[in-house]
Each structure stands twice: as structure tokens, then as C-alpha cells.
Image (cartoon, rainbow, N blue to C red; front, top):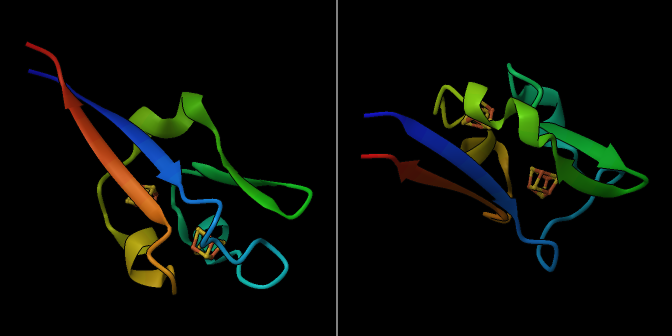
Length: 72
Ligand code: SF4
Ligand code: SF4
């Protein structure tokens, strides 16, 4: 069974790169990036997520959701 990862950012609560940007700085596999001040995810890197939880621990407003999708 494989796990596929989908990462979502809540744009309503995210503080943006200039005010925060912690997820971009901490993720060891570069899943987060910025587009102007908005945080985006780089989808091709999402399956590299190690589920280390560093981004979840750092985000001050719990704006990151990591969804685990399993195949059969
Ligand atoms: S759990 Fe770890 S590897 Fe996955 S997105 Fe967050 S910081 Fe990156
Ligand atoms: S750590 Fe959270 S609040 Fe900060 S930029 Fe990332 S998603 Fe937004």
C-alpha cells in the first residue's frame, strides 16, 4: 500500500510569507514556496513529504493540513 500526500494551506488564516513564511523555511523537502506573498505548495514535491510535522509545529495559526491518501 502506498501513501499519497496532499497538502493544503488555508488561505484565510495563513499570515503570508512576509509576516511568517515558517513553513517555507523549515520544510526539508521544499514543498512550500511563495507566489508574491501567498504560500503555495509544489505538487511534484508533495510525495516527498516525510510526515516530519515540522511545518505543522511551526505554523502559528494551524493553516496547514496534510491529507494522507492511500491506494489499495
Ligand atoms: S511534514 Fe515535514 S516534509 Fe511534510 S510538508 Fe511538513 S515540513 Fe515538509
Ligand atoms: S507557517 Fe502557516 S501561517 Fe506561516 S506562512 Fe506557513 S502556512 Fe502561513
